Image 1 (cartoon, rainbow, N blue to C red):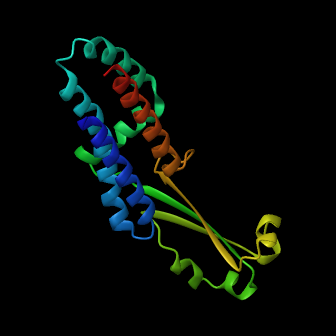
Image 2 (cartoon, rainbow, N blue to C red):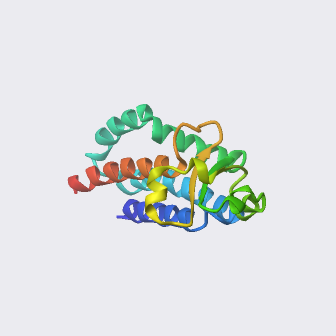
Length: 178
């Protein structure tokens, strides 16, 4: 089924996003590809099965469900912006935990952290390290979170994964009919 192949393309681009978080330009390209591939799954589903008498009524119901799904609506809007305006801006937030006071106070640490369009770096002082980090024995750790600008309440990767799960459920439901 072509729609399932397109779904696997979505997963590929999501994996590439994860691999290229330290390369802002490349990250943008994969984000654009992810969003466009994401939307193409339903286009291919319609094209491939429009002649099947069962598809029309089933898909009409699914379209109504997709219209009320905030994640699918949001990702589709990001795709629309990508195609017609520009790749959406991504905000990166980094939290750096370090055991060494000299490192924590060194502004050069911030320069080592590469992020997307707008990034903030919070270096946690050794005196403020959380217990969980202290027990880990790590010398340093960077926690990263990425957000679509204007939608900072949900991590970009979590949002994309939720969309992938929703898309998989849709394609899987139709595959069950076949």
